Length: 398
Image (cartoon, rainbow, N blue to C red; front, top):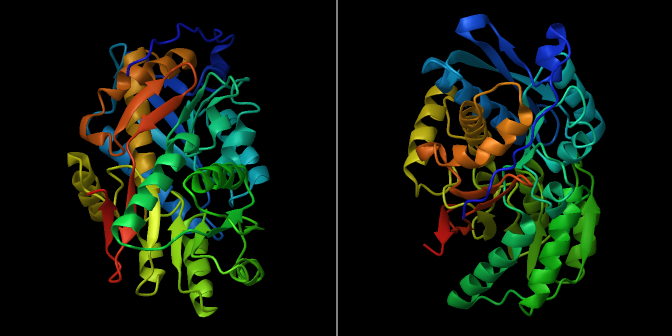
């Protein structure tokens, strides 16, 4: 459903020298336009590096495709995009430093955040000078419920998707005559992990299941033995994983080595790619995904096109859906800037994401159905991904 756009107006810039920083980073080169800067805050080192690098690669590919096709046209002027990355090392403190640098020094109009680890602290200052639109892979319900007028969600609100995901999982288990009633949670100690676990606990119990234990760990943990010992004592049918691919794969490996023969249920942070190659034969991974997650399901025309371009540029397919999310995010942002007819009025650009959604076409890899300009919230399709004993990822329902 389409929603009315807010008619907000951003404060005018007071000094030409501060225009790029204070008004969002669109540098005006006269009749020829200039450049629009996109900042990317993502883990490029540490335990979530592969996830973060995928996001950066998706952004770079989108920027290249747009610029190779002449850039964007804003109020009759041509602009090129440029992307600047900053390694947050999957920590909030480093993410804040990245945000301030990208906004102040690099004049980013929009900053793409790879996770809620960074996204939430960035909201403390993205509406202050220098302002920037914050697009994030953050599916905690509170991300778009704090009244911030410059945020855009690039993944579903988990309070909406987790109940549906759990319902589809239970349908799958019934169809396959599998008994999966008790699910223990290995929870990453972030806002995302807490919100996801709360939503899962409520939905799972609401479907007749039990949650015998929850064990937390830090974002850059490299060993889950103590947590798994605690959970496996409770003899769960399933272990729920809530983090990115590298730690997810390690947790699966360690749990199998410790004798766990049940199933794994994985959150959206990891689906496909390295996780699948790390799983031992016979594992089952359910994860809520959009109907067009790269490297998983090819059910929209743009996914195959995206994967072909990605492989041509980087020599391999993306290792998970995050690269597709950042790629779509850049394409969506560029459409919004053009619809708004300005590179500097951030409120106008934020409001234009609604109209811009229809202009994405095949680049709408995640089948985003609607956008609410009042909050930055989105609605998108989802399915459950099931890995077969051979490691192939299939959608349910098909």
